[in-house]
Image (cartoon, rainbow, N blue to C red; front, top):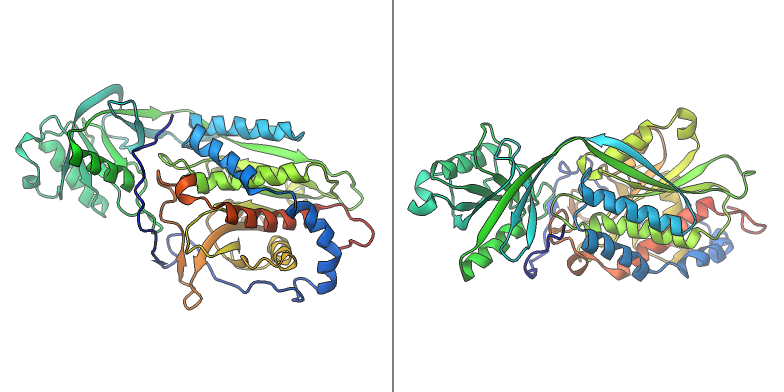
Length: 473
């Protein structure tokens, strides 16, 4: 279902998020590797330059972004367990099959979803979160929209609230917005839309499922910040009518898509390397950078390396339901036996690798505890060989690399971010992620995608490539 709204306003994107609690781990900047450093010697750089050329001369950001376009624009939101994610999985599987890879699906159950749909008279539909104990019905509730400032006082609501759909700017605390909802219903509202202002990580507010203490007999939706702004803009031009429908999705199944390139030469040992990215997005967000960008990078690297012999198996995994608690990655790791875990040399996890946000100054290779491992060493060494100063190392604990780390498997997250050198507690991530504004137009840089393709691709290939005389690692 397409969920495009009116023309996007260009909002100010400059900000700093202080503190690491929202991400669960402190990002810490580390120096970029230089040629001649312990990570890579000048002789080694010269020896592998021809191998790097096999990657950097062939990977194309435009090709990767075409995958981003299909996932974010043709499919749109890809919520874990819902139809959009399944369509994305089929698309990714088909692309891998075209490249000649062995492809398999790995399904797993996920919890129920409560989804609200706000339909306009012109057929446009916006997805929002629905309160589980609000009115859930396939029958729509229709009404004229009014915006009410405040809402904590019954006097805030006009006398003609009866039968209207009330838009409110959500108060920060759960108890406060519950009072707003109760007051709106008492005033006769036929439906309530709460506009989220701030996300948990400094971003603009995303859609959410309102948490009510008592059941409501009207639909209660949680809208993204920009959806609320768009509605206010339309109200300024004239009357707006909406049809609200809330659906409870049950018996849900998410899935991982796994593509395998078998090693041609097993003499080097029975081992494998993973390049991964999650394919799902949050409700209401097209997820161009988070994380169609990672999927696009993964598919483009796969296209380039398919024809080269490798000494290790190379697996590409598109995880489902990352946004619902790293569920796909956790399931993948939990299904592995200990011998299977032991044969994984490293996991390169691409998540948000192409943002155009100007304060996201570097592509970071992040480990959960900030330690170095095969993945960070390979990517930093590749950056040094290529003269690419974008790549740096750091510490970060909120993506699909976490379950692998917890299982003792070397893994790192690749993400564009900004970290202030004067204070490692201050970092920058785009404000539009997890929102309807995470689009190619507003949040994708071809230049940054190309940089990520070259560094990550060269790093992966250096770890798995077939050894030839004069090209020993």
